[in-house]
Length: 238
Image 1 (cartoon, helix red, strand yellow):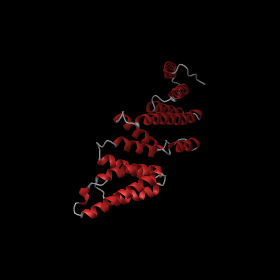
Image 2: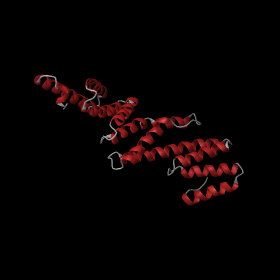
Image 3: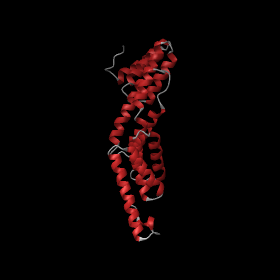
Image 4: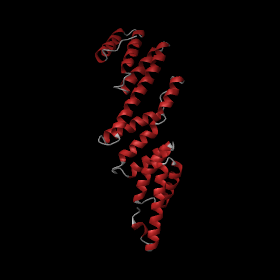
């Protein structure tokens, strides 16, 4: 319910009517979002927020809006609202939630984008959004390890690392098979450094060893295979 201080200049009857109207509108917006009518909920929340932009209720509406924007696939608005909330309320107890929604907004379309990159534009880097998703998830886990959203964030981080590592190896292998050995080496090294701990690390080392071989760097190739054998004893080169 809105603080009565917002209506200090109004009569008691006006205060009661205004509070009742705003409360009812807020509940209708919540119900709309719960039923999946995100656009309707967004319209009502935005109208309340526009009327009372600096109230305590405004902070709660920002939280409601960022979720509704995300569910309505208005991802840019979800990110902007989450950023605004965190900027204006840096020590608020729901900052972890804002970070989570921001990460989800970036994450949501990433798998499809990566699949499209696998099929074409082989030399391009993965979309920036997936890297921003990873960055937001990492901030959440590092800043709020006890957050209820941390376990899901960690799982998504693992999935992102594995997918990006796989993509970088895919590109590196493409270069290797076409004789672009320096490009293959650099791409595999980047994948190994950027996505340390991913399941694709063994493949990155394998590509690096093959590239060194083709570049006539036998000692570096042997060193790389030694690292591969020590860290991935079950991985067999093909």
